[in-house]
Length: 142
Image (cartoon, rainbow, N blue to C red; front, side, top):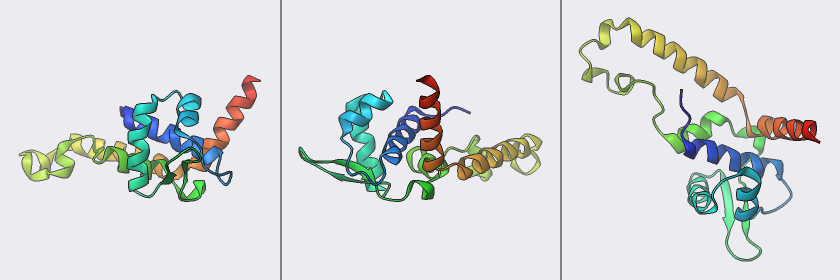
């Protein structure tokens, strides 16, 4: 499974906001610097995340971004499905009528099991979990 850059950067940005949850706005430049995300790309991502209700944003010198929901309410699955749309491993999952083997395909069963397992993991991990893990890992480096 390959994670698109958009999802990787989006999750990183949201984890940064989760780490600052309840402390006010965080500027794009700060998120970009701490998470290693190109600022111009992050601006586009934050617009998308704002549009879908993950963040609230305010422009200007005192502006920035903050999570619109509690970090424990946002799963990685939610973020991935928003930023990546159809992450299905096979096109025939979406349009089974396009494949003549769809009704008798043993391979399809395997990939459905893999997709279900991945979705189970992604649905069980929240931004709060990742923010806590990030703090723990950063503490180990000190």
